[in-house]
Image 1: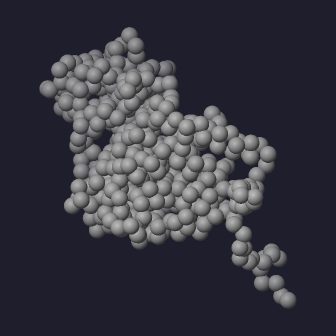
Image 2 (image 1 turned 60 degrees about the horizontal axis):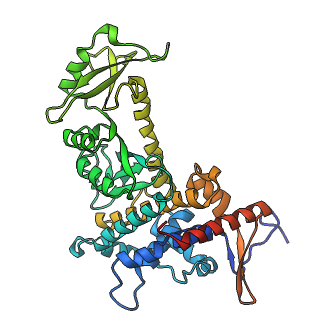
Image 3 (image 1 turned 90 degrees about the horizontal axis):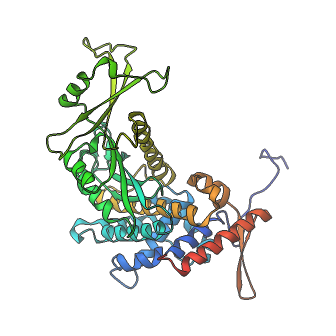
Length: 441
């Protein structure tokens, strides 16, 4: 026989109970131990008939799909092919893509008061509380940012970046990496809308005995009402300032002798002054970084000599110098990495449905999947894994082949792994069990 393949092996179908994602069972075990299924059944609307899937079937399936690497509703098919693994974690039925899409539309339907979306918000909040109660942080840093999600959908609007999509607002806790609050918005909504109310909602969602002690954001949060709230709550904050006429006059009033390099040869200078907005109750520090404009703009005849970056802050000078405030404020760039993990790691860079309200439900489930992953790393995995991305965890733990064996009334997950990996899996399972015994902490 003439060989018609590069290597001399044959492919055939196996009837054995096999899985290509053995480690996904551990993530499902953590989700269940933390109470995901019970909370979904408690807060989300029940199906309209006895033949419909319960809400936990949809949420649990979508969360596992996203954790396993799926990016669209069609990827539920891949999960349904893992029949043996799904039976192992108590999911004998997986809804198809069309059924899941219809459910997303019902849960977010404005005519039904978006009962499902609101219920998912309660699920997210309770899961976050259960995760945050177990860390030692008392004063959290809230990083607020709006992120663009592309969506060539019939109801999607153009964003300020000129692309069709959505502009959800996200609030991350820097220390815990948890997304405390998500607000799905149309693409044409201003990134600066509703920051004060968003902060207040975040404040209400921090567990008892903890608080938001620090706040960082870009110029969309440069608003007097928000700053007054932060001052009233004794929160230390640093916000990129709008370079409006008043700020530009303040920069021009700074004398040449007040500018200095924080480190010799760093290539930029900093200075600071005191500033107040018309509606703020008090003044605050205005820290300016300037860098020489080394190349002119081809289309602008009159140009300033320097580029300026301005940060407003209430940090006392005795606690942080001007340069230290800039460094601390720049750490909010880590929120971009959180956004990247949520969007690229969990498939939230594109939405599956034509209706915005259905996409809002899908996005919130993505946030829940992200937060569960953060909790899984922090509460069940080795400490060295805390900084791993979901892609790394999939490569090291999830994508391990295995066989499900039923013998003598017991079920075994036989994995293709070395002794060290098996021992690690046993440790993770023990921690998940301890967590399930007292999910409220």
